[in-house]
Image (cartoon, rainbow, N blue to C red; front, top):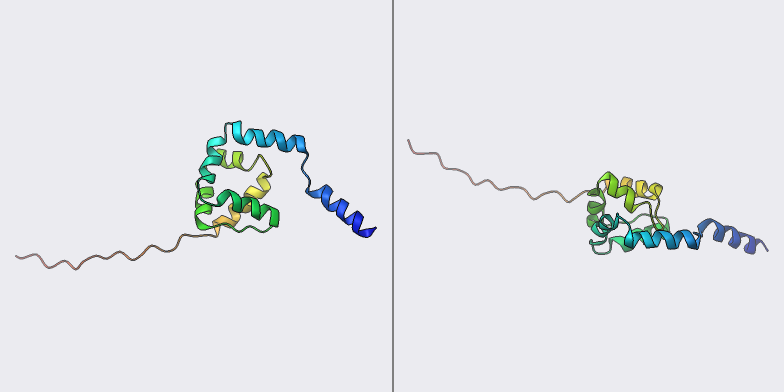
Length: 119
């Protein structure tokens, strides 16, 4: 009995109404923000990592995915993290996570020794 109540409570907290999900999914394909989402989804594995991170409730994104998310303007960021299963709250958590992900340091630049100019 306790298990049944817990299962029902969990299902109630994680479910998304199908009409809202269908409407939001339709907007993912047709909406004006399609180009914004396409920018993120061009990075291999990024959209899958975003979905997996949301489902597992632990953000794990690669460097290139974070670079793409950092590259979104504020308008595109709001559009990407407003529809489908995402929310602005999740988007802000992703943004915070990505703020800690940095590119590897640039290799040192070699400057050849210049010979003194003849007088």
